[in-house]
Amino acid sequence: MADNVLGLDGKPVELGEPAVDPYLVGMLETLLEHARAGRVTSFGVVTLTSDGGYSTGFCVAEGDNPTTLLGATSRLVHRMNVDLAKRAGDDT
Image (cartoon, rainbow, N blue to C red; front, side, top):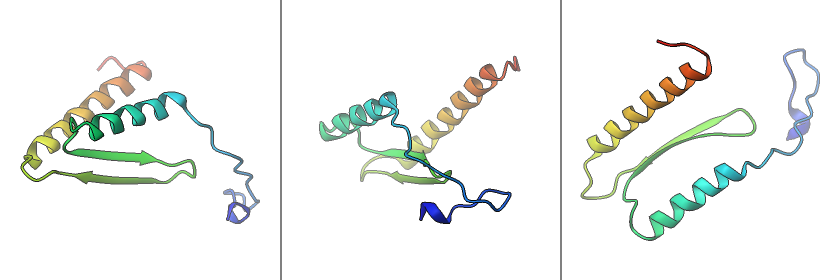
């Protein structure tokens, strides 16, 4: 399928092998360890893929309050906005 990818100019694009981020892999492995130990009961996730796509998903365990997960997700969005603004040099 990689040979089917065309750039905006219509020419084939070489994708190559995606880079592996050890920090990302470590974070996911730690999360999985917590889940296996029963310390994670619900979660929401967004993944960006090496081909430019994304996916989303969530799982709310029976007995957990879904609005708590929604509130935590809103907090994450806020933290990301603050961090991205700092990276861009925006002081607002």
